[in-house]
Length: 253
Ligand code: NAD
Image: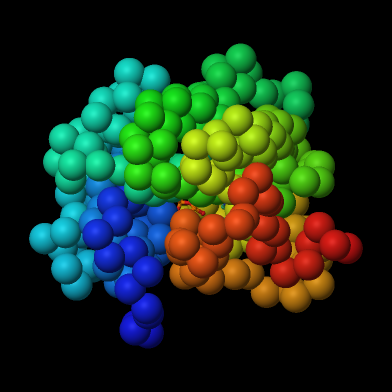
């Protein structure tokens, strides 16, 4: 791994989705830059594996968290502050993607998508905000290119991620005067378990999405993590309410 500047020395970050993919890559990146971590995910074994991958694992703890539970979201923020004394950065990365024909999306599917992808961001941000005001901290939310353009068979996912972008902008505006920044990242297609497992109706597959990307190939998870680190760092002091597309040109096309 590269050696990065220590932009996060003495900073505490809470990262959801840290058991896999972009969340794990973000944990590795922030830790390499000096951050103290609380890693959260519903997959406890995956969290343990992430901790084992850290070179300074003594500066990291983890908590099992179902992000769709507002109660557990509040408890995770409280556990972070109790364990490490403060909170500087909240990375909302946990998420799911399920593609279906509209008629096949059950009420349970819809509510699960909103619970994991959207409600989590609201409840974690709400619980974290007083602590972020105290540290003049910031939030980075993992939205998607699906927040910016519609996608076939993906109405619930697109709606959830579109709302994450607008939630980010609204909180950025509401808390700018108290020194808290809120930004969203919109990846296109990233090589993770999510895209590996992704299936679509009518034998459509990821190739259909890949044809939309001028840069043709998929991003690596640590390429997204690099931008999480940038937006969360002091280098991005003047950036708030932005949506950074990292999509191989998909939404420019
Ligand atoms: P991933 O499947 O590798 O990781 C997602 C993580 O979220 C997993 O560790 C999973 O256990 C966790 N998670 C799922 N449900 C949860 C719950 N109820 N409570 C807590 N944790 C839960 O996928 P990824 O690609 O790393 O996705 C991370 C984020 O990036 C997601 O929000 C996803 O929508 C977004 N995203 C991914 C892509 C892509 O192409 N991979 C593109 C755009 C956006």
